[in-house]
Length: 465
Ligand SMILES: [Zn+2]
Image (tube, rainbow, N blue to C red; front, side):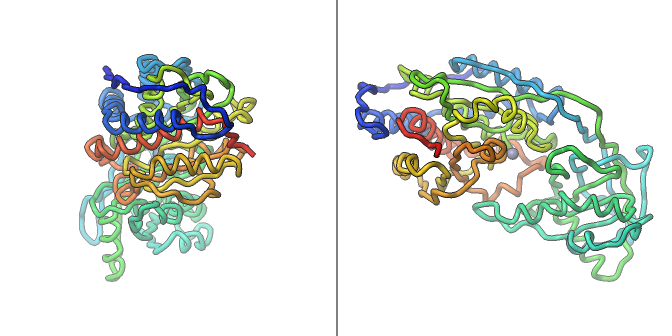
């Protein structure tokens, strides 16, 4: 791994000239604008995501690969001149995909494209199981089924493909068939559950994903997501009155306790080292692709932004912290561990945000900080406006999945919202690979993050209430 840092041609006039608290001085603004220009011209984020996806590869939570990713992250932090590099490990139950197959055997034989969902179990003795499906148009229909009504059957929950949108609206509701279908299939005694993938694409890649919100409970039966075209196919056959049979096999399951961890990289603040501006992404990924858009991009964007700031002649007033969260995909385990490990520090976290929505251009800045801090966010919004970013609401909670436990404990957030039009085409599929990232979009993200991180750490403004 070799990273070429740009040589910053910054003419940093006296930063100490900020006489009035909170005021964006011409010198501070000039530094922010220069950082933005450097980010647009820099390949650093691309080099980081290329290195992560190529040298480490897929990084399933709790796996040996995720441990290698932590070593990669801490080595990267050292190379990019962070002042403090920490790996904070924690335990978690480890789920492994194993192997699976799914074939339609009636009304005729046809291979389907499916993948096991995180938290799902194996077929009996890892042998084939073959049964007629019980078709449910929606997960609500499955939820209404009576106990033991599906003995000897494979439940199939159809639903609809996600309609692509900038914000990814529609993911949450579609996700219900992944999140809450299996409990009812299990209650009704089904042999297995098959669901339509939670995705917006029309190719035959299935989308994996966790079945449970926090990874603490799991199914005793196979749960398999099939591709959108396969689900369409089953729907048409069912509508035509066919009895549909599936043959499936899965050896997925829990393999006992393992370890994950967060990698924490700090640029220590020159005046208020205890006050933290937190940015980051998640280091783990699903194992079908190489986790480029989810979330190698977020790791690259935020690390590159902080690394550019590390090139300044002096550190900003506050600490800028990059967190590479572990085990996000299996239930925000790293986020929970961070909030617990740093519980006593959370009151000194000024503002936090995560990049975890792919690698598309940022188009909107929203925030949820104090009234006193909102003008500073507005000022950041003005500087990044030429990147094509509009200033959205100032009372929009969020900040990203791994930020949610600290936001729930009072840490203010902002969100640099990325264009998610194609995000759910790729999300959790074998197609989540490096070639899907546009280097120019990636650099635009870094440009917005560098301005935010630098000014949030430099300006004498309270983002907390
Ligand atoms: Zn993600």
